[in-house]
Image (cartoon, rainbow, N blue to C red; front, side, top):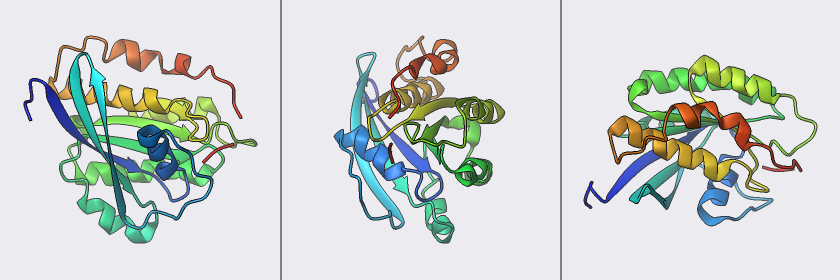
Length: 201
């Protein structure tokens, strides 16, 4: 595989069990939503190829189990990661608060500054929600990463989030000549979420 024409990035999805990581991944890769599915046991793996600035970018995305008892399984998969998708459920304040713990684990197992990140507030179409969009942006600012509100049910924000992450990794690795990464993308996340809301996973 020629680095001039294509690149492969390893992405991990991290967050508590039940926040919708598997549903997000299925929506992104297969454009499907399943109302019921089995909880991920350990690690599941999917791939999707994007074309960004005429560069073929293959994302190898690992769906990590969020349960505490699987944390040691998750830890070994940090090795070689290029990007992290941190996910919480906007209807679950515990999953939001645990984002700080997940980030601490990431820092302990990686060179954080070398990775791309996005924070996803998932199930944004579900009411009542307990975590506001403002709180999501506040957490992202605290962690110095980008924030997207997402719905695996209707697809809101998911493609945008993964494309943004791919562009950020490209910038960090010097892949391509993407001058759109950084300021414009990072500062305009709020403007990408003007869609109707509606119940998700």
